[in-house]
Length: 448
Image (cartoon, rainbow, N blue to C red; front, side, top):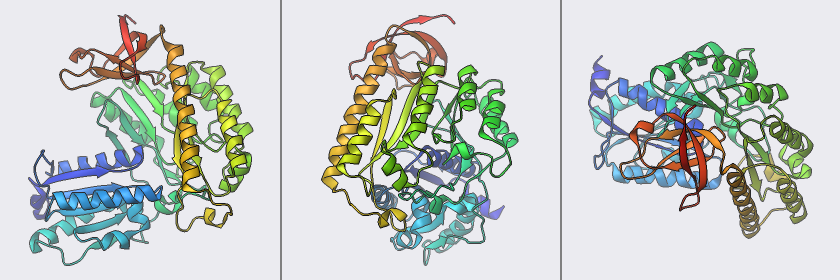
């Protein structure tokens, strides 16, 4: 009780880098601290506690993490600074050497983060300044433990963490080292969390994780079992599957989503390369033929589905010939949008053993080609939807600003600000592009 009393009235600020999973976890940390009496810092106020949830997927991500940590320390002098996440897991001593950092806690220890904050913040308060940084990367804490998280983002959607970790060990990736092996919550516990979202008035849930198609290793269940159970939750109008590996996206899953009223015609499927040779060098678990079969099956089942894909350019071994092969394959696919990443060398990965290094200039040029292709594909997809009617979940907007929302198939829609539309699913007719060209205008509102 004395320790909890010490936290009463304290302020905290939160900064998150990286994936949707990180944002969900940060929001859960904030909710737990709020229950202990810690409020979010007001504008212009110096926070008592700063929490940075980091990413380490690329060297650029590491750099952004370092910048964010330094900025928070500068803007909140004397505060208790906690750094967690993948960067903290992989390089704890590097972060701990940063003046002003109070606690470094790795990804596998995130479930104990609140207890560690309570324990160490007490000492921080009593001494006004910690004598040394506390670094936590406890080998006794099993990487098989699953720490749940379900939280509301800045918008209308909630993010439900269903799985963590990865067993794939792709040659370019540090995620298995940062987040541990694949594990998940039980379907019963996840359905309970979905019902809690309903109680809070939530309409849409994004299913998140590191490799969500691998769901069930901890509980002897399957991802198909999970989405069937979530589909039965009364009150949730929409589910989106954040990202799923093509070899784990079965025809049964696609069929279920096509027949479900609640699972949206929206998929995000990592491709990484359209060259079989590069996929082999990456140790991916599929080839281009399997990837194409999944895309074709989605389009047959849901012709208006939004299909996003991740692509990495400039990996070791990606010659100009292999890149062009990848580009031609991607051009031939009926996908909607690409998330393009430039390869970044990560210490300890097998990719460092692969010959042929792509220059930074070549990486940039290849990235720009794919970004241009993505813009063309997205615009073409939007143009096909002009004149159609789709359900849109509108999101709150500041007074005087246009409201935006997304259709079931993830088209961004703009309309005049109307508070009555906030968090409401409304059927609209889609007009032409808005002034910025990043959304379609809602021309008519129609009854369901």
